[in-house]
Image: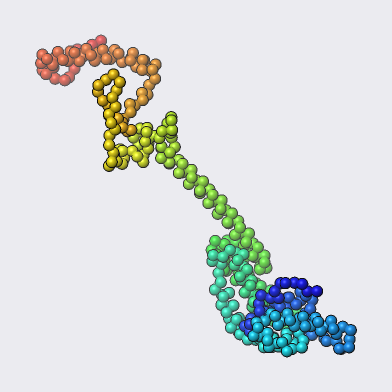
Length: 341
């Protein structure tokens, strides 16, 4: 019992697509093992035979498949036939040669201009294969010699290998050259497999390079990021890498951008125990930190104290000389006698 709810074929006979329809419906009927009814291998038995009733049932079932796979206006013309073979033969006689020439020219034109372009290798190959199969349905040759038929198929496949390779993009030139240099030429499927593997390898390498470039770019951004984004002082306060002062960042530094137009000084704050007032703002200069520690400062004072003493005495003598006019007389030079041990 037939319980399948699948459509008989997606290619309904419309008068312009006989080749596609015939291949599709034949595939369906063969799948049901009822192709003998359209080829005539299963002839009608005598009406008195025990198998006649079964044959009538199966013949009508195949007839319904054929009619239901046609558009309504075409299917109506086949309702009065008695056997599935009659419908099959009349459909072939009526529609098989119609527009064949124009369809072949159209397919050949598409194949001539077809290139990979934005398609993947698999998409490009599948498009070629579909068009080649359509051409094959038009070319049905009855070879007297089986060997000649096989040789012709091999020649056609070789041309299709060249067509497939020549339509590939420039980035696959290397694999294309390798395949074309192989003797004997590989089959169409083998050539496709080689090119597809090369495409996968290139895509993998390209993905790795992109990830590496992104990582390098991220590292450069981090390396050359603004100082206030990379370095914080205690308490989480930002540090301006332009004026080297805390409390603000480069984006708000007045030395770069100037004071805001609406800026107003803060109200003076009175120090405890004093009558004077000190005006402050968030960018008031801060004393520079000493580069020496306490022990180093004491050592420097010890080393500089003799020099400061000499400078003090020299300054005093200089004042006396200036007062008496002697320095003006001698000028600014010093002789050997001027040095003191």
